[in-house]
Image (spheres, rainbow, N blue to C red):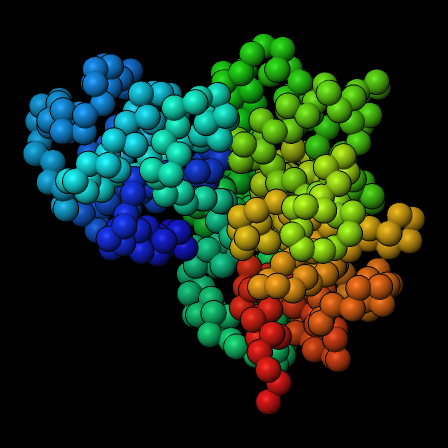
Length: 442
């Protein structure tokens, strides 16, 4: 399978200011596979160390953290010479060995310029617990579930992806191609972007088998609740986690602690939200008190929405029948558009790697996402159907006068005065289209 993050690793490799790079992302998003593929293609040799599986290797990091000593002992341990330019050293599940995490600082300062990649499924959680993290001494690369374009490439639709990548206008896509993309999108909403789930779909076309994979991933996530935190905290993490399908499927998706259980308060669960966020399994979108820059200066942190990282896992968590995929229209409108809005949250999060945000005029209007591009704020409404009503967008436009108001929906490309519709399947190219909108008109 092709991953778009591969290009980022290539850029890292040739960068003269290269530092050890940490891949961050939830379990099962494909970090290990990506690095091994990268090593097989771009290096002569890979030194692979999994700190969860091999506890013995921890002993090599118990002495001083001089890189030359560590590399020399790794050579002795593996019986193989490590060449700085031809060997990739991969520290996998590095959160299981604090000293290895700390050693990245010294590798960065060493003149030998070793090529080192580290990865960890719960690094965000681990980093928050340590004061010896190598701040400023590492590069970061977020790794997410496979997005819709990566799903298309896995389905051998590279020509279709190339067509979308090369498209640099708002002209309608031919209707037959548009419908083909929408059908693929509906399948993607069910399968999701976890690489094993996608591979299972490609190999079998059996949705029941895909669901088995999704349930196994959910089980692994829940196992982490008890494995990497205290018993009391793991119970709260699980309670919050189990409330998310109901929270997401509500017509008004604002998170309510009382939906977890009666009497629940912020102080009881805010740590759980942060834990799940740092573990990479949720996206948090904050309500804006007012849509002004800087956005994070106007978050109302008491009001927010939570989305799962992947629509396939959302469907499995909701225990929705695989037969839903047969009724394509039903999948788009199921549970108040939860799938489509969650899809949009994941695609948008991959674009900006920061917190999401939305705007509401209590009881009157709500705009699903406010997106900053350059120095402009763009309101984006997500629609699962083809309705042409846009009360909330119009109200936002009248109040704040943005240059454009945007909708992502199953409809084709549309530009009409200040209104722009982008097909849902093109949402991961949002910044390309915002850049086109920002160019001077001929």
